[in-house]
Image 1 (cartoon, rainbow, N blue to C red):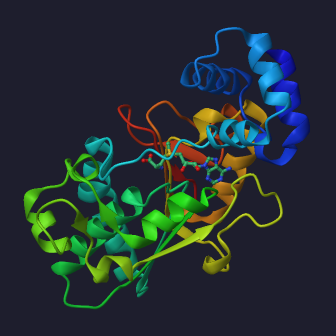
Image 2 (cartoon, protein in one colour):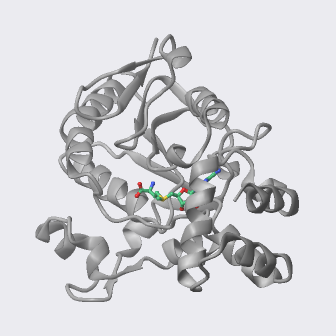
Length: 272
Ligand SMILES: C[S@@+](CC[C@H](N)C(=O)[O-])C[C@H]1O[C@@H](n2cnc3c(N)ncnc32)[C@H](O)[C@@H]1O
């Protein structure tokens, strides 16, 4: 197995940078099962002579799985606690723009879920607020899919029926997202491991009120997680919120910068 991982790292140093060893091993095992090769040596030899297989193995490091309102309790907390609080703060400071980043957005469900929540929040307001959601990923195919805004039943099954009626053009498969949501989200390529440019290029300066980075850190080793988390925290405004996945948390050295708000979900607030 080590020979395969070393070969992978040698041939695709950039793509494999920072991934956990055991995650890469699981990807190799999955590929072996897919093509019905049982012996690790046979797979190694197969890989040596097969550029296409190398590509497929690299693609396996990207897990483009998402759905609308994945982990509903997190979105419920954002909707009923965090967004109303942010709204009041904006009003007090006479600010009009909400800046949100969905980092590792995959096929777009997370970003569009956030757009729905913000649109719902703004509904009751007499003043006009601006919504800028930046959604980034390293998977060009997933970004392309996200931009199209067409989803199947599996993706949308956590959405309230009322919101399906209001935010989709159709109430049956395929579900086409409304243009008003599409216009609120800017999709682009951005690698969270990039040490020079730490925010999505379109956002220009970061200063995000809310950063969602869910189910991305789990694939990376501690050093890479540390670097990604440091940059995410830098990209946020003071008092901004960071929302991580169920099995993800900030590292001890970041606890001076951010405080965990709830026991039941990994929501952090950047300290003042
Ligand atoms: C499992 S999906 C999570 C999607 C969404 N955040 C959610 O929780 O439903 C993980 C996504 O992270 C992306 N990703 C992995 N490494 C990344 C990196 N270094 N920079 C940006 N995106 C990354 C993958 O391409 C994939 O689309």
